Image (cartoon, rainbow, N blue to C red):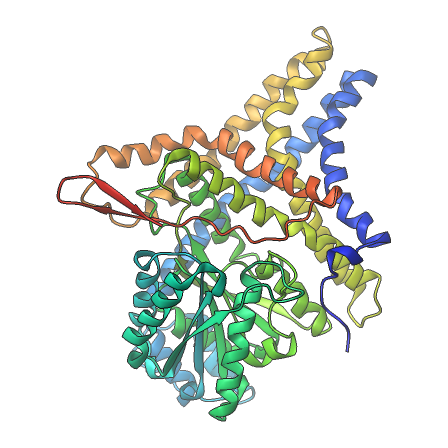
Length: 539
């Protein structure tokens, strides 16, 4: 069996190190290229910048349309009668009086030749919630949102995975929550992840993997087939839509080759969006819109944050990686190589609501936001892993498929790092070297006109930001809604500081072996009101 583990840091040499260095090398070279070309001939620099700008511009309109389409698709899926549709795939018949989507009718029509591999009432859900030092005010609403699901909780196992290193206070909190809610689930238990396990980085991967092994033992004791069990991992602030478990059940039962797939809902960062400062709101909304777009791009869909995978498949991959801080995205590649390319991510077009970054001061919030995005952009560390496993290790996977996926991964991280900087500032670089050359003088005007047309995407972002807003808390007056529109003046700043610079930081760290070996937990906080009118932050 092929070893799918990412190499330890000390074992990364040769070609592996080359492909760790490559993203940063390319990113910094692309940023330097307009200056170098301007020294040679400003027309070359202007041509390079213009071509790059136009390539990115061609993505704006399709991406905007996808975002709007993704939003309305999500709304449509939230309104569907999922329990009735699940009953219909069990019986093989549609209620003739009911309106049903065409794809559901297609599923029913295929059942005589491709029956579901188990009945819906056989499916068991396990929900693992990972926590570190989150307060009860953050954690308990997550548990309550699971219980509010339109689903039979007698078929749901709840696992609260907490870190021993967090201290006794959080162990007591975890046990209290289990004692309070245990009777409402099929079963519920808390699992303490021991500190300092050899070979593990400090991160979520080790925590949820340790908890999943305890879950596996429970399934053995209860003689429950792992193929019946769908495992969802949530962060402490994640609140699934009430239809999530039904949509997951339906998709698992009707999917082709359901065991060799992950199931990805849409992450929306709206739980505390009214309380977050404006820059965090802009970033959170941008991330939500991106997730709406990618939910419709099946070729680009990857495990991210909260996702689900069959227990049987998790056992075969030895759960999540305990050697990287980006265990969610990395799980896609582990599964892809474990199953010889016979693996994909299927979209669940219902949301899981998450927190925007928020702390008790603006400075701490900004710092936490940068740390979160640095962790996300550290997914560039997977590039070397994918090349090693896909192209430098013998396997049965189509090389065309591997190269396409590797290129998408590589190009995405390069664009994350350099795109905003070149688009916003690249047009002014040739003029620094020649204020008489026609192309150098005209380039800023051309760039400005292209960016003006691209404002269509900003209007779509504002529209989706307003459409996805939860109800405004009573503590805020009407003008807060106006600020939700004016906040977009921060977009250039947030895109550069919290996206480009975070990506460049991650890639530069990989270049110089300054690996991120510790999962920096994003600070999560809720705001409550006191009788005296003061606001309290509870992280």
